[in-house]
Image (cartoon, rainbow, N blue to C red; front, side, top):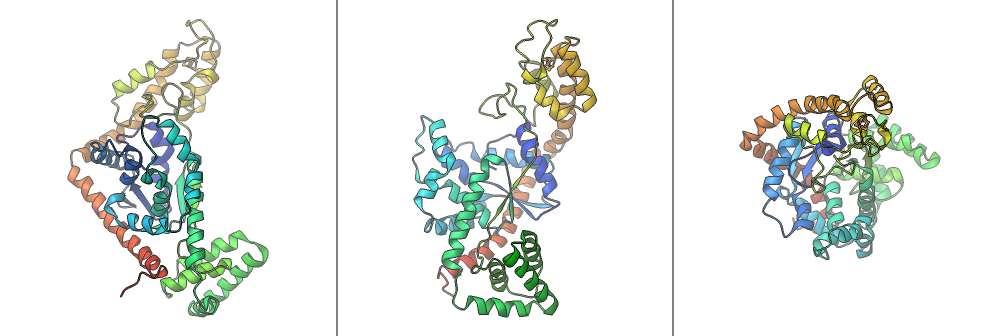
Length: 391
Ligand code: SF4
């Protein structure tokens, strides 16, 4: 996540809630990508470190926990930069120019020169962020799909160029023997099911089987991952996108909630501020007077009710709106209450972290240490594949 400072309800429902769940289902790495902030805000660097700290506090307050996941700052793991550099050698320029957000953002950020080397290369930096941990899945919103696809393309190109070692098949067969008789038979059956019948489930089962193997070397493991699909050694596995089904939380004016749109309810907003913001929200434009019937479909408040209010409340409010039985302030009441109730425990936790910045810094430093250990393993393999091995 780019360090944009204090987070809002859009981040909470769209990302943080799912991270808090995923951290119990996967080994998770959550990274504050401060270098990415520089790709567009290279001329406004004064706030970055504060934004990083604020964001870390909000993550922790929202339940993303250092005991279940690795939380760290990108620039504290310099291996991201090395992998980015190495991948840049094989990344065709045309691939970067074709990433949809390249042109879009350049047009949106008019007035700022984004014809920079760093901005053009940011999807590659993002690919390095992902591939460095040989991530299986990347939790994203649909708008990020082209970026994960780009990471997959880069991984494929890298594997194609450097995964084809001499005698690959013989080495892979020898590695199968090292799995032990039972596991080797299972591996062969699953491989056959995938290669002969296209059984994708068998491929996934075989991958999981390999992941758990402690008795073979990392190199053999990669060979066997590659052998499953019939190619060479898989040095950088292709990540899959994990699309969330989080509800969209619109901003106070019905547009996408964002700090720059000035329409956000922040996680740190006091109950009074939340109340004031929601009370000021526009409603169905057709409801000029209290006696005018309204239509929730046309009302920017309604999508928030869909996130926060139960079925019975929604049915009551819908009817009240359509029959002009209730006023808009009355309709907003349960919403204000529900948002404040949800934010209260988060804010209590945030106070603890804000009062102890050393604790937050330590959490991020320990996270960086753990991330570096993982990253170094990948880079050792990558350097070796590129012939940069001088030991
Ligand atoms: S009653 Fe509620 S849903 Fe209807 S227009 Fe007012 S705020 Fe919107």
